[in-house]
Amino acid sequence: MKKLIFCAALFAAISFAACSDDDDESNLPVTEANIVGTWQIVHAEGYEDEGDRYGKDTWSEDFPLLDDVSYWWYWTYTFDEGGTGTYTEIDIDGIEKVEYVDQAKFSYSISGNTLTIKGDPNNDGLNVDDGIYQIKSLTKSQLVLFESSDYYDDNVSGYSREETTTYKRIK
Image (cartoon, rainbow, N blue to C red; front, side, top):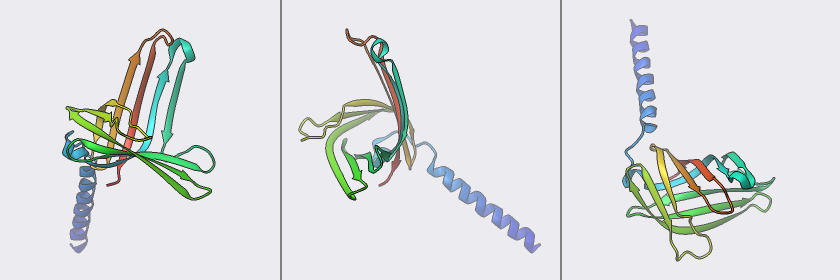
């Protein structure tokens, strides 16, 4: 009987723990309140097709990205309440053990599952590219953004680009 009670209690504890882990990874409503925080890039994948000019280039990269034997880099987005934020690039020189940090301000808005980011024209040096992103997934610990663009000009026939970026919440 004691073994039966012990097994039942153990099963209940494991089931409860599994449910609480699942709750952390369930999709949240896409709202400003749920996106507020600091998000660090962990993965990017996509393609850029420059059509007749250069062809198609694809990528799938994990971050921090090692550019050579000793140089790492990644970036974060900090979304504050009220539609403003800070973009931060972090470059790490592994030989000299020096970390370089550069920041730029931006504004953002959310409509449905669309996140629009606009760089602040008053930024010195580093600037944030304007972008319109589809929020593919938003949980307590992960944000997945999708961006695509197409255009046509005289120099590039049939240009298209798509990228999916995955971020982890660090604050």
